[in-house]
Image 1 (tube, rainbow, N blue to C red):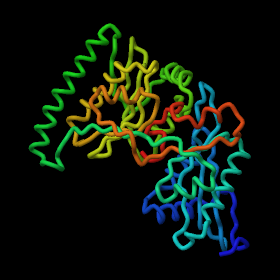
Image 2 (cartoon, rainbow, N blue to C red):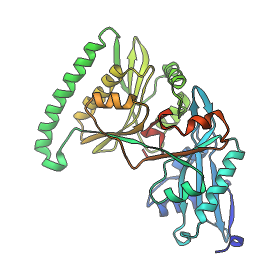
Image 3 (cartoon, rainbow, N blue to C red):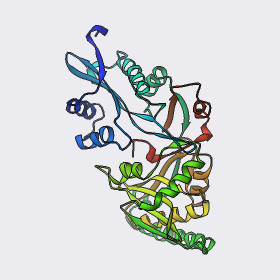
Image 4 (cartoon, one colour):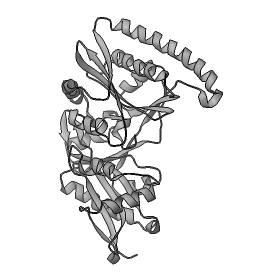
Length: 349
């Protein structure tokens, strides 16, 4: 294949069927057209930046930045997250992905994106880091709580273990209830986000340096309106107002904690909410509860207080770059402890 045979262009309506076909071939997946439209076209923050490689009028490669606006000290910054980097199997090893990445970066920057994030897998990591000028920012930490031993010792012992786990969790929960007895706290489990969460989200954004921009429209798009997955919202109310939120996804044997938010990052109240989550899933078929994330210590404090095992290294790597290297944001972007990133900020869970 020579460069004269290759045509790199932007997405246009009608390309979807070929993109889905290549995606399901490359990733051995069953991504639907509904999911693709939800992620890239009907995103609440805007249309994705999609770049395609074409040869003989056939799409052979795809690289995309879906919308993923950032919060920079309370200000919304237009940004994207790279997703679905893929080359058709018969065209790999020809540096085609390098060309698509460079075109896509230019496309996003010209359309107003100030930065790009990504969580590349091991195969894509070298090329993306080399040709997109992205920096490795942090390896997300891994937080694990094992609530069952079914696969190790069988269902009978699993039930016994869960019984004693449940007693321990409830005792801890009662202790944290007592510590917060004057706060008039209530926890509600729902399939819908509360309307009055905006004040808490605004305060969270004001006190974080760099994070994913989270407001009610974004969270509803990301979780409540997901075409394939049913997330559960565990909402902490203080005197009738939503103060904290944990988003979970039951994946069968594993429960993923996707987001942990609290208006003032109150560790005791957040631990109370997380203990509620542990108790909620202790009676289910779940064997473990896990979370990936990184921040300047809040996650460590809350998950550690609830008995999670914390591994400071995982295979989820946050990478990124700022297009204007002379901007104020660029001076703070590459400092790991300025970041707050949760599992649900990726396109994985």
